Amino acid sequence: IILTAGVCGIEIMDLAYQGNEQVSWSRVCVSYGEFCNNARASVLITMAVLVCFMVLSLLSAHRLFIKYEAPRVNNGHHTAFSH
Image (cartoon, rainbow, N blue to C red; front, side, top):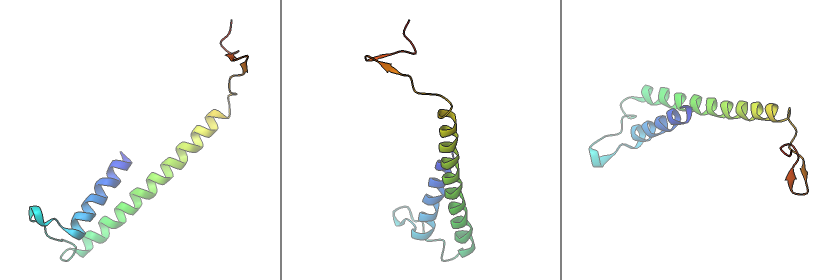
């Protein structure tokens, strides 16, 4: 959801700065500079949150997997599941 919000914000920023002449959308940053500044700040904050979320996910996964040992392989068979 965070990634989707960031990508949507980037798309809106692109339309605001560049416009789209094929569908008669003009550049709005010329007239509404405050909107563009706020939208830019929003996109930057969203991307920072995405990076923090990814780092926290990696740390959480690392902490989870260091608690368990990998299954031992003996003659090509996993001994953890052998009977």
